[in-house]
Image 1 (spheres, rainbow, N blue to C red):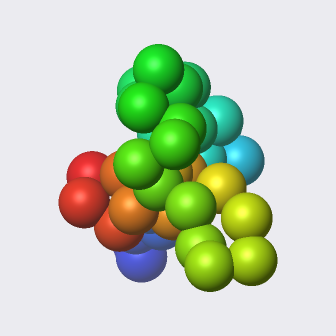
Image 2 (cartoon, rainbow, N blue to C red):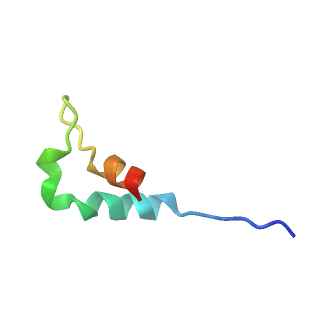
Length: 44
């Protein structure tokens, strides 16, 4: 039987965003878009 690994990416992205919520100003693109969720999601 084949195995399947299912990851709830939406839940992980939500947790990643709020993990660094207090540091929002440190994680912004030049046009003002918050990138803390992307940064944290990538490092999980």
